Length: 285
Image (tube, rainbow, N blue to C red; front, side):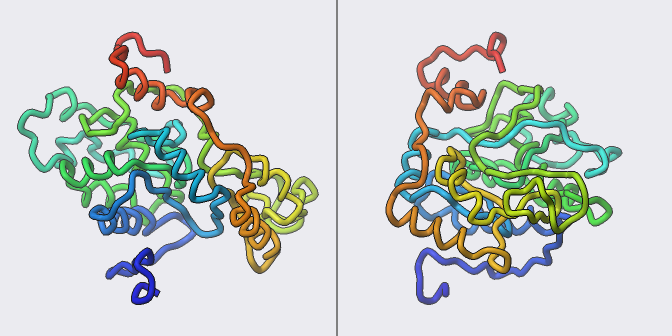
């Protein structure tokens, strides 16, 4: 595929991935570094069974509105998913390639581990600054711990929500939780085992998530979300085929606007910095 299409890239390295999230962070950051020299403003990190439900034009318009903003949820990391006894200070992790000029408060303050979903919208400005300023090997290894489960939902969030002086990073250190109402549409249902579930419109679920069959098409059509999960071709290929037609016909839901995006504190911060009104001490998360 990569020999035939310029927009298809196959990484030189292969990664072993599992349902516990292992291998996801190394693979995603290898991919981000590989595409760094290409022309793009935002990347969307995806996983198996994700489906993009917006047209290329809508995604382009969204990227332009976001400027350098990154979109992700804000939650505290679950202590069962990372090594709480590790040294999480930037100095202890040798996180910075060059510590000269980095304030002691940043170097020696223990980073708060944060999480949301693996699916995030991440700006090239932020990604480029990560690779220019940070040694990623150790922090990736700390999170990609075989002793823990669900390790793939914390790395990007932790780097973004602990102020490290990176370009495109949120500076306000908002600690309250904030749901991501843009990146991924999901119908959660944690009651009962996998398989038949009367609460799901499709009557079927996997790992606490309803499978999005054609019963969800109206919801997908109206959604402001960028992606949806879970789609299983072996369960209902009709959803994927219909979404393809919707995208082709340019009838895929609402196009986001600036007013709606202000629900994200990181977007408001970017706006204030752009117009010169940002004050870290008075910013309301």
